[in-house]
Image (cartoon, rainbow, N blue to C red; front, side):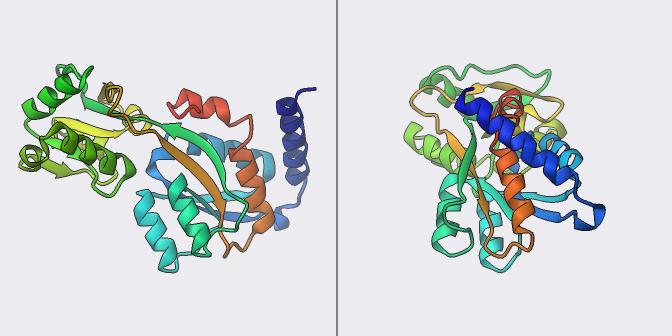
Length: 251
């Protein structure tokens, strides 16, 4: 039996064992997750809850904001943020050392409202022209994708020109496109894919792309360590991988 198959079998046995617990022993797990993972996590949470009887309460937000919330005292059991932020929280005593697991990755994409023309962004020069031609451009200055896209604008030499038509999307780039508040959005591709009425033009051109790695960590202040560990193993296990891939978060 392969190592992957063995891991899958062991995980299944563990989940089945958890599922036999009585309702009184079922735990509530507090998850703090970046919106970058939101396209995939609801389905996986539902599977885990059915298999174990545990309840997962998920709070979504920008990874940097959630990290600060944790530093400010917000309690959680499991954290699902960008990889560098989990590393930071380990160093600051908010994530248990040795519990970090990388689970998914995503590139940055550009999107428009469905039904509107798709600009050419296949090369750096084409992307530059597309951004300059847009009436309004949206991305989040606090999100990992927005920080990376801001660097792209600097490299293209158009940061000052874009600032005049920039709108901060926070976690709502797709929603703002659909509402007509912006004409062009830059965000994690899975975030954009998940919004009805949004069309992803494509990923950033080669040489300008930034891949974000998403990681799990067990919070040091967890009140349900065993259940939280089981949840982490499930999200990092082989059964979750196809869901990530289907939502544009494939490794």
